[in-house]
Image 1 (tube, helix red, strand yellow):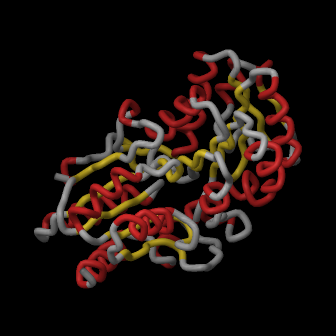
Image 2 (image 1 turned 120 degrees about the vertical axis):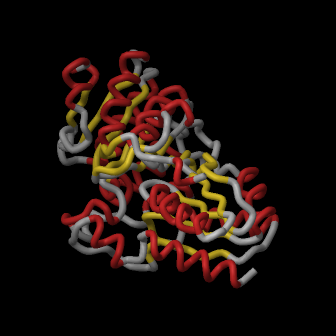
Length: 317
């Protein structure tokens, strides 16, 4: 039962990255960290303390940072680039496309402060289209972990994963409810099995999906809640297996419904088993300034909206 999944604490996912990269560096001497003037925000302090010679401060020059990282891979280094998600993608898309993706470089693009939950910094910093931008790049792996433990696990895993990676995580303190050892790149995480409706979620919204699932189970709805932490490569087998049972789905993401997780699930359904799908995410809009809780509510990304989407999609079966 989903109600048995209880948080073991609360911590921001960016701290999972900070702890993960320090541990990855201890295990692999080729791991290096680059930042664009945001070492503190990306929780790199421990890494810098232990490995000052493997840290590069690029200043507010994100495009240059990507170019430096691409070059470092030629010498066998495993560079982790770090800045806010908006600057990790929108500001440097050309450099990522040409110098990293097209060239197949082993660069790990690590992006914090993603989505609406960046909060008070407002629309200019709240990127809601980055998953779509990154997943469309040939050869790019896209990972969106759901809590501190999973972000730490993903940060460790990508050190051994050969090829370009986009790792997306966030700013706010969030419930911790997974185990580090449960994370496998490209393998969906099933929190509950059901036959009435599938809920596919990623990032911070996985916890919201679990909250909604608890309410649904108490109402007698057999709900399948699945964490799609790896958007690309997508665990197509897990998606097909789930929708074959439930015949309908709800997708939940802290991202524009255009181009994100929902589109990936819909593409699988269209090819293999057309079903009704409802999307919970931002709807072709920019964000604004506010607290994470206020923004998730205003833009329809909270637990009641998931319940409404489930009700609608089950009626469409």
